[in-house]
Image 1 (cartoon, rainbow, N blue to C red):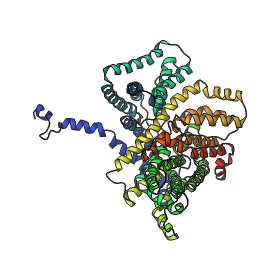
Image 2: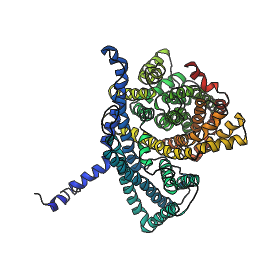
Image 3: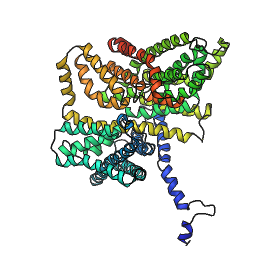
Image 4: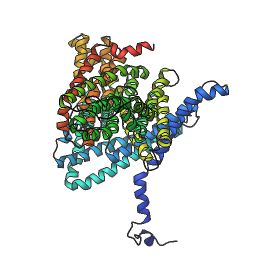
Length: 631
C-alpha cells in the first residue's frame, strides 16, 4: 500500500497533490456533466415527441404520441433547474435589487454579502430538511408516476440533492466572504441576521405584515428576489402557521413540474446556440444590405437585426449581448457616436421580449393561465411598431448629424447573397410560429425544436459551436433559465399565501374604490409598472404583480391577453431605465461606457417607446388584431 505521506506531498514540479487537484476539479465541474446531459436530453426527448406524433405515427399507423416522453422530460427539467442554481451562486448571478447596495460604502457592501449568504443558507437548509422528510413519507407510502411507473421517490430526490448542493455552494461563498471581511465585520453581519430572526419567535403580527415586511427587508438587503420570496413566505408560515411548513418543499417541486414552463430553457438555449453559432452576424449582414445605404443605415440595420434576433432568443439582454458586440464597434468605426451606438442597441434589444418567442410572455401566460400562443401573437405588432419608431428616431438623429451607412454597391445580387447566407437563421421564426399556429406543435415543443435546430446549425452547418465552447453554451442556457424557474417556484409559495389572505381582492377593491375609470386605472398601472421596472427585473415583476393586478383590470373589462402585452411592453422599457436597466448595463459593458451618460443619450428612444406603450394601452386592437384572426 503506498505511503500516505508520499501521496500527499506535491509532485516534483511543485503541483498540488492528486487528491487536491481532484477536489478542485470536482468543485469547478461537479454540476456541469449532469446539466449538459440533462439539457441535451430534454431537447432531444421533446423534439422526438414532436416528430414521433406527426411523422412516425403516420407511417407506423399508430395513434397519439409517446406517453412517457413528456413526464420524463418534466422530471429531468426539474432536476437541472435546481442543479443549475449552484452555478449562479458561484457567479453571484441571481436576480436581485441593488439600489441600496450600490450606494453603500465598500465595507458595508462586503458585510451585506454575509447577510445575503446566511439568508440563502437558511432557506436552502430548510428545504433540504423538508425534502428529506418528504422522501421519508414517499418511502413509507410509496406511489408511482402515471406514465413511467417509477417511484415518486426518484424525481423528488432532487429536493435534498439540489438544495443540499445549494447549501454547500452558499456555505463556500460564506466562508470566502468571511475571509474577505475579517472576524469583526463577519460578526456584524451575523449579528444583523440574528436581529432579523428574533421577531419570528417573539412577536405576534398580522400575516401580511410578516409576508410583505420581511420581503421588503430582504429586497433592501440585496437578497436575491427568488430567495426573498421563498424566505419571507417561510418566515410567515413559521410565525403565523398559515400553512403547514412541509408545504414549502412540496411546492418547490410541483410548481415547476409543468410542461409550459419548460419553454423557458428551450428558448434561452435556442438564443444562446444562435448567437454562438454565428447566426446573428449573418442576420446583421442581411439587415445592412437592406438598410445600410440610408442615413443612419448602420443604426437602422442594428434595429432590424434586433427585431430578427428577437424572433429567436426571447430575451432582451441576450439580444443586446449578441447584437451589441457585433454592431457597436462597427458603428463606431463608421463614424457614429459611441454613446448613440450603445443606446440604439440597448433600446432595440427591448424588442427581444415583445416579438415572439418571449420568455416574459411564457411567465405571464403561466402566472395568469392565459394562452401563450395568443400572447405571442399579441406581441408581434407592438414589437414591430417599437422597431419602426426607434428607426424613425435613429434616422432623424443620423440625418441631423450626417451619419450615413457604408458607401458600397448594393444590388439584387448582393442582397440575394446575404439572404442566402442568413437563410438558416430566417427559418427559425418560421419553425416556431409556423409550428405553433399551424397546429403542429405546442409553444414548448416549438421551443425544443428551435433549440435542436440551432444546435445542429451551429455545430454542423456553420461549425462555430465546437468542443471549445459547447459546454459554455449549455451552462449559460442552464444557469440563465434556472434563475427564472426558481423565481417562479418561490413566487408560487408567496402567491399562495397572498391568495389565502385575499390580497388581490383587497387591492382590487382599493383601486376600484378610488376610480372605476378604465382609462385612469390603466394609467395608474402603467405608472406603477414603469416605476417598478426601474429597480426590478421584468420576470420577477411579472410573477409578483400578475396575481395582484390581473383581477383589477379584468373587472374593468381589459382582456387578459391585452393586459399581458401592456405589462411586457412596460417592463421592456424597464430594460433601459436606470438604475437597474439590464440592457443599459450590457450595452455599457460591451461599449465600455459610463451608464449615467448612456442613459441620457438613450432618452429620445426611451420617450419613443413610451409613446408606443400609450398606443398599445389605449388601442387594444394593436395587441388583439392578430389574436382575433386565429380564433
